[in-house]
Length: 252
Length: 275
Image 1 (cartoon, rainbow over the protein chains, first blue to last red):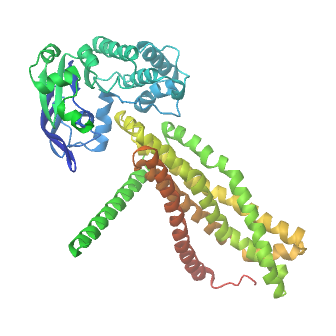
Image 2: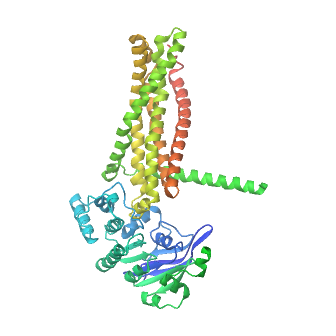
């Protein structure tokens, strides 16, 4: 049984149809990467899985239960099982890095301060930033912010981690640190990962399955090796990252 | 523009306005619901204390200065009129009752809407556009409970206290000009003030302040939660927040004045200020 399943999910922001009767199943423990051009609904799809957006039509299932009909309160409970890394980190500016990581623990558990401090230190070490508890988000670089945000996302030991463009805005070295981190967490925590990206180097490094969105539907679904050898012109163009005639027409 | 398009536009605008109104009252309802379901737990109270400091303590100087100067201006303006009637020794009554019933609460509320309301909208608006509100949601924490309720509580509890400051400084300002500068004798000044201001007037001002505080907190937070994208969206939401809060204060004040006057007459009958 798949852990997450989207059945004929449609979503539009008039006049734009973003998802068009999309079907997708994700198995437990899988590292799925969703790619596609900007504006093809990758982040929208991710937000449907945690209920930040609701489908106009279709169903979303998680662990054998339908969740798109959940009330906000039911979703609040369910979201403890998810970790979400936002594109820009979305750290709370007014809290230190340590307080950011501790936030979900304080919200959902009755752990003592010493125990919380121990977990925070452990998560910081896991993302390679030990001793960063007192740093404010404004004092951190882009890569560090993402790593702190990742430490916060795994604070409650989630079953599923969703990454929304984790390497965007980072230089190749910092981007690779994040990629290695995603692989490491996947291996050590045995989580299910869903990553949205248009960074192909990152996709090939972290995925054991790649799905490509195009015009609201899944255009490609397969292993990274299959994607590299795909004869499909749309897939080939995206993998090679070369603009075609249609994209360049506006420049002439 | 053809008639059909005009009707269409009116229909669309009406629908959008009603939808926005419905959204706001839903927001208010959810805030009040959280208020009655466990805000007294430590994990929630810890969020209220910093807001109380921000809304209350840091607003004291600006509220005090405004209150004092308004009291002083009232004394200067009222003095000539009262002197023309030969009643200048009664000036304490009009100054005190104006300050305690109307100017104190309204001015404190307007200052709070400007100083704190704008800041609340900017803070929550920035959190909205940088996905921090979504981050709260995916961590299973309701942003209304974590962000709105503490700010709402701080506003409803601290605006009455700020109003007391505003009232006190307004009365002192009026006294300073009337007695120390314009030479009105001390004893008749305070006697007139005591006749004009009774517990009802003070109570009315403070209850009013509580409602003004609630309106400022809810409007400012709602505008932050629903602001448009980017710096422009946040800036527009801040302006919108102040203007809406200001209108709400003025309109609420009218209805309070009417209601309180009716009740006062029903309980005590008509009593003259110059008694």
